[in-house]
Length: 115
Image (cartoon, rainbow, N blue to C red; front, side):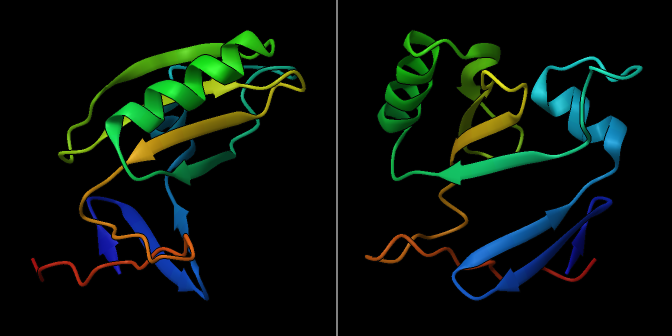
């Protein structure tokens, strides 16, 4: 499914999402540039609450991660924060009430309205 220049694929119990590189970099709070900058890939981990987003991002920062976008409300009605790990990989920790998590933690891409 395509929504606002973003494509969503259900892949078993995970969602695979493709964004434009510049849009993803902006969303991660990372400047895209020459080698050593943004890799063009971010891993997202969805959690069950805003408090869990805060906890995971704080734990990552205590472990040496760099917070590039502090947890905050999102344009889609959720709550998320982004950090880069010690190897420079971007991680988004998100609570998105529109993407329900099953008891086993798997995620389901919802049916988006046509438009």
